[in-house]
Image (tube, rainbow, N blue to C red; front, top):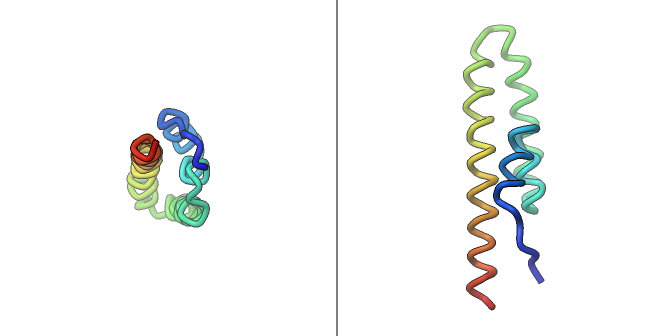
Length: 80
C-alpha cells in the first residue's frame, strides 16, 4: 500500500537539503546521488562554477521532489 506523500513537504525537504525530498519520496538512490553532486558542487565553489551548478541542481531537486510526490499521489488516487 502506497501512502500519500506531501508534494509541499518533499519540496521543502529538498529546499533544506537537496536530495532529501527524493529520499522522502522513496527514491533513495536518486536522493543520495543528488546529495553527492551537491557535495562536489560545494567543492567547485572554490573555482566559482560551483555557485552556478549548485543553484541549478538545488532548483532541480526542489522541482523534481514536488513533481514526483504529486505524480505518485495522482497515480495512487487513480488506483482507488
